[in-house]
Length: 128
Ligand SMILES: Nc1nc2c([nH]c(=O)n2[C@H]2C[C@H](O)[C@@H](COP(=O)(O)OP(=O)(O)OP(=O)(O)O)O2)c(=O)[nH]1
Image (cartoon, rainbow, N blue to C red; front, side, top):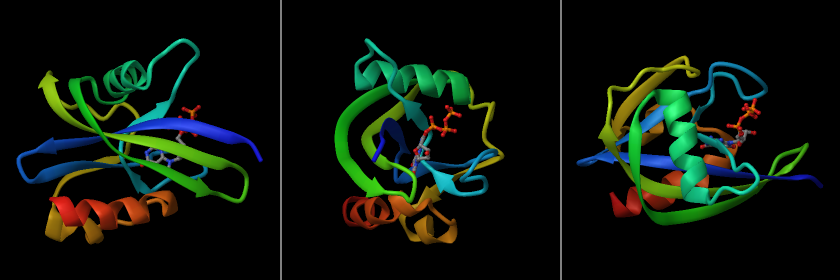
């Protein structure tokens, strides 16, 4: 099966994390962590900084790797490296997503996460 390698940002502000809702495509309306595919020659961290600038207009500082999710969708295998991050500069603008929310730990279950993110959310609840 084809593997897609993706980086995603768990952007934290104090006790809150930033969740985005996909605005298009196969997973439209699902909630996720912003990010996208790594391009040739990029490190995961470089890809993440670029993707977040494209999607949200902001600069982030990328901190530690929180988890790498491995998940089989019907059409492909997803490998997703999820980095704890924080906002460095700029104001968030939703260039691609249809909605976004800052969620406290207690609110993490109030949005419909993409299937690959469900285990990650359980793991996050333990550390937030
Ligand atoms: N960014 C991100 N993608 C996720 C998450 N969970 C999850 O299953 N995915 C999947 C959805 C997509 O198939 C893939 C991400 O690829 P992508 O962001 O480049 O999105 P895309 O398929 O729309 O690709 P493209 O149109 O930009 O080429 O990973 C998540 O939390 N964040």
